[in-house]
Length: 86
Image 1 (tube, rainbow, N blue to C red):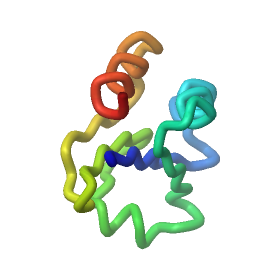
Image 2 (cartoon, helix red, strand yellow):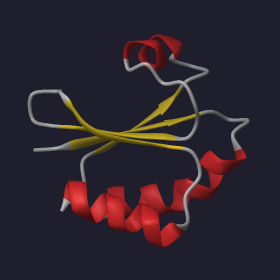
Image 3 (spheres, helix red, strand yellow):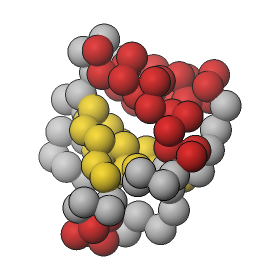
């Protein structure tokens, strides 16, 4: 089963705009983990997160499948989630 890591930070306004989309997808049963890079900087470093927001898709073995960095329009994010977590 694929998993999405959503890297965010309290000061990130683009991240805040994505939160409702991510929350809806999570409530629909998709496997999503939100990671605050201020609280857990080691995870940001481990996954080489260089910008926020970052959406990182992992396969069932924990290997990166795809990454999306930066703000995107809602339809683009929803399509990304549908493509990788359906």
